[in-house]
Image (cartoon, rainbow, N blue to C red; front, side, top):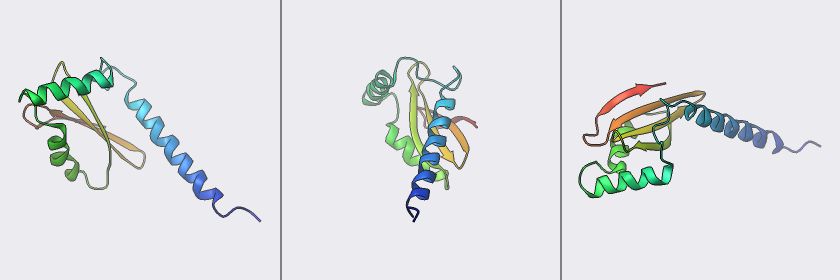
Length: 113
C-alpha cells in the first residue's frame, strides 16, 4: 500500500526548491543585489543609521509596505548602505517582486519583477 503522506511531502519539496531557485535568481545580477558587503555588515549599517536617526527602522518600513501586498509572501529585505535603500522581496506562486524603499523617508523608489 502506498504511503498516503509521500505525495504531500514531494509537493512541499518541489515548492521549497522553486522558492530557493527564485531566491538565487534574484541575487544573481549586480542590479538585483544591493548588499555588496555581506548581509551581516549591511544589517549592522542599517542598525547604526537607524540608531543615529538617519533612517527609519526596518520594522517600520515593513509595517507600512507588507500590508499593501496581499496575497504575496514576504521573504525579507536587503539593505544597501551606499544608497540607504531597503529592498523588500515578495513571492507569489512563481512570481517574485522587489520593492526598493528609501530608508530616510520610507517612500517607494522602485518596483521591479
